[in-house]
Image (cartoon, rainbow, N blue to C red; front, side, top):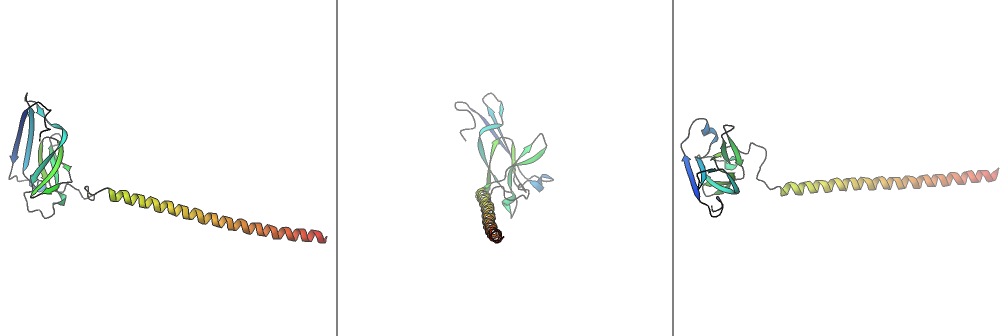
Length: 176
């Protein structure tokens, strides 16, 4: 991509592939490891990018369920693979994801860690939240109207009873 370095400058892009890995990493890694390093014209390493870079890797196994794949990078400080982009797009036999830094990348298995689909649209949740709010508001309104109706009925009954009692009391007072 043309936006890796500032306009007017030049540098060197070094890409290395590590293939046929075995051992503990084979349980997690589902692709070759690609190490991407960028150097400016003075040989300084550039690791952070201003805009995301799209990286596409080919899954190396016969993984039937590729929904748990994620683009991961190796965190040298933690000495472990970290899932960065769980929302991969398949382009042919490649899985593509975005990153804002350069380091070692691979496809990781079980990046989703089972908490639902991280790539699903939040529009459904948004609509569901508004429908729930509308139902709660409608319920509160309905209950308030019912309470008002009962209160009006009760006041009318009290008023009728007072009128009847007043007539009786006035009628009895006239007979005295």
